[in-house]
Length: 360
Image (tube, rainbow, N blue to C red):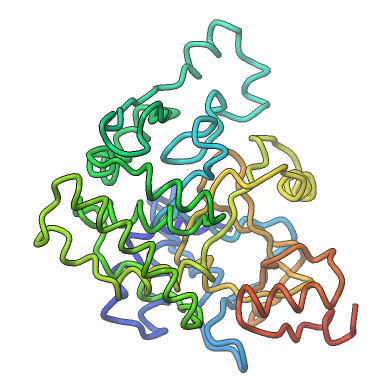
């Protein structure tokens, strides 16, 4: 099976064409992009986007998918390291610094080869020492490769012009993680790397008045940071309060915790176990296609991150043509009541999967 390798840029074409037939054409193109051997016949995509009876859009198999098959890969629209891992992972791809290849490849290399290959690239920029709260703040970030440093220019050149200490401290003090993603996306939009509506195709969360009020406070901090850095009103006019709240509402229910399996190699169960046992998320990211997967407490698909933020979706069992593909949004080992509570509070729905309907 030829796995999909979905670039989020392909999905931006859909902002004016949301029909399922158009989604199917994009999937077909992505399935056959980069096939080895020109003589190979085009393969239909193993999945399609369709409507479910009670859960909105979903992902369905177009043919039989076997246990362990790599269904597709996905690159994020936007990603950001967790504050605790800022200096431990690549600032762009979230790969653990010093781990650019799989463990099996390491064992075949000499110490000298490893030191040459895995020497991290470090990018530095300093806050304005006269700015409030910026004194002594470590603002050095690391990239795992020249390629990641180049790819980061879409946001890094904008970001490093401002003193983010007040905004970052507000997020850390209040235990907020998603505003970091909005901050990075805002820098990408201002640099022209992404359009402001790049997440519009995703489903937004329902927001209470209190949540909107808190988001508006964060937006003011974001806007003030850009203004103090010398960005003119006309430059940041696209970043409105409505934009900030809309983006954050979509990120809240579509962002994934990135828990790297550490570059291990092995069978599907080993990789899944390594992901589950990860001590903490190294960051968060938003994707397009993976966000279309609905939840099940007994999923048939698992999402994995082996060495970096690029996601891999694999089949946990045999899947028949026409069957919906589902992933688990939470820790399925929790009790029935705990799962229901977390899913309702965090994602706004009651789970009616077989496990939950059975009271397991």
